[in-house]
Image (cartoon, rainbow, N blue to C red; front, side):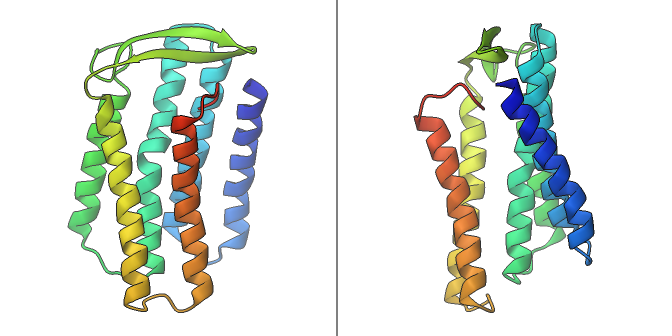
Length: 195
């Protein structure tokens, strides 16, 4: 399992480095998206290598830093590609909500609000957190659902208002958004040992 996370981490580094060679405009949103992916994968890699609960929780917290802000950067990119103006206030509100969700999600092992109990288990040579969810765990799903619904709404609005310049752009964005939703749904409903 650690090998899988290590490969994902290396690929994330390669993608981030490639971004600097490919994107001459230096789109900050795209860069932050790649950084978020790298942070997620680094956290999962640290977690998988952990042999003590404290280090596993640190790895989990690092992964959540990337996971919490990844949907924000995706939504901002989609808004930009669809040429939909939004206020800076929206950015501040969404970042503030993300910080609150991050605090809740990284409280495991310290406060019983996200995980009531958490322990470490070694599965196929890699560490895995065994979690009993707490009362505020549902907020992370609400948070993700809000972003997913927003992305879909932006795409539908953009196609209805013909804000996208080509059908290829629209198709590409739909594949990305619905692909992410599908992967998330599979992860939720298909039993697996991976995050």
